[in-house]
Length: 391
Image (cartoon, rainbow, N blue to C red; front, side):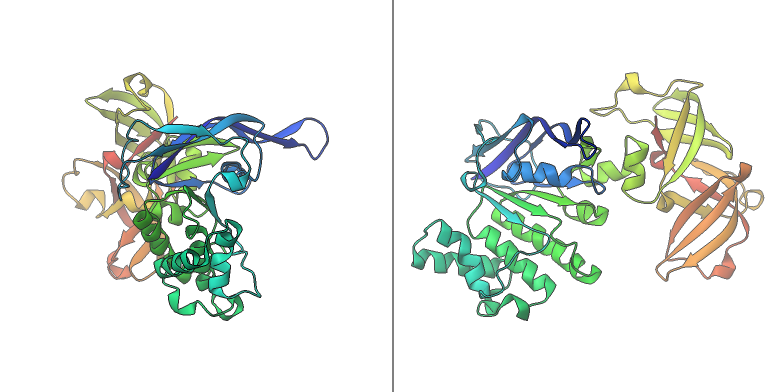
């Protein structure tokens, strides 16, 4: 059985430090998490994502709005899918944490140092008065799921940070929660260990069919692990979608900039025809593909003569020979450029280029040739599908 989460108009206000008015940490959030989904809340520090997670857990009471858990008997799937009705929802907005059947994994592990690994994992079962034989079986099952069975008799101080976080995850899994909540669980680990645990956490959650809400400020974590991501800023969800959709089609400058490095160019719309917008920039003309999707319809197309901002990812830029030496231009957009600087990183190179009018852009090149093969004067090419028009 998997659980859905329905959040409607959720608001949390705290007293202001200046004692004048109140600070709104979460500002009217409405969203749904599907059964068995690995759902991420992503945003900068102070955006309200941890406050929202703690309201789902029951540690913080909302000022307004509702939280409901919906149960379904449909078998869990490893792939995201639409919620299958009917779902029976129960309002958990005012329920205490111990009545919600959620499992929580904290940033700081929160393990008892005087207890063994298996005693830490069994703690929640003891509170629930699960009989000893069943408790022992469930502890073994949870430790095996996180690949920590052989460490059952060790104390937390005998484990690495990554191993301690696996134990914390097993402790949350052993109570068989309806919803698993993770609050920046990898932020205290080194980069190499974080990469390894990303795949492990996703495997465990999908194998168990658990509905999971995961808070992070790490874009790589969200992009590599999530089924869907809600990007938050100033207490609001500013964009919601699958990782690839958010990265390739951001709807605001904030989302484009927050999800990775990008280049911004100011432009004027010359016209839109056949799903392609023609754009004039200080560096020359570009083309951009206009997609009609659920949130941006035909009525939201940029109007001729309007001013817009373009977002172009560094990896979407291709380097070409100098325009006068390259013969006919390719079908996609190309602009003359001058190479200013190159940072060689082995498998990639990061170039800084200057376009006509003094605009500077960054380009990322995979498997770069020897630096001597790049002329100082060249051109850049950009596929229209990689040019994103922002308001």
